Image (cartoon, rainbow, N blue to C red; front, side, top):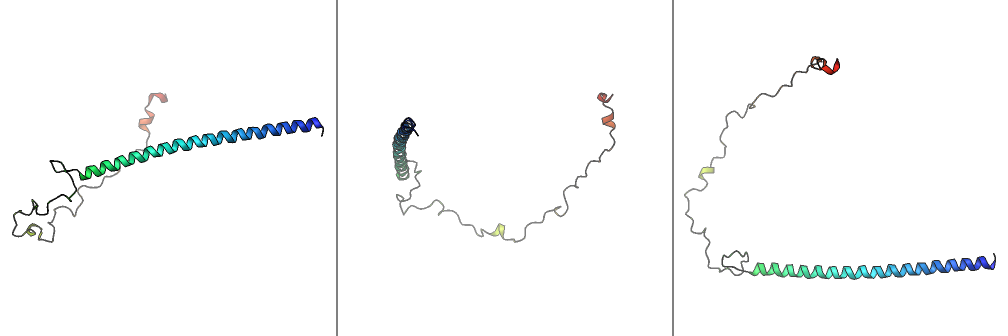
Length: 134
């Protein structure tokens, strides 16, 4: 090898090393930008989730005039149920006392006869009457 070839190879190698270093720098810079953007996005997501949780807690604790809140910690224990004053029936199971269901008429036989397949027309009379065959 001559000195010129060696210097040309060294110059090419130096260019490749420089290009590789530039690409590494760009890749690291882009990775940093992506990491910062994802960190910002996740921070916003956490803040949104915290607001949602606070809102749901507030809804759970809220008691309006209509009393729609399902939280029973504020209920008065001496409050009676509306069903406590219901009239008592003499025998509540009387309509259901018979263990045998009522007999149904006509259930042992099928409701209608099974369908029979349509007869197959093996002759091509309808096909042979077409004008396009002429």
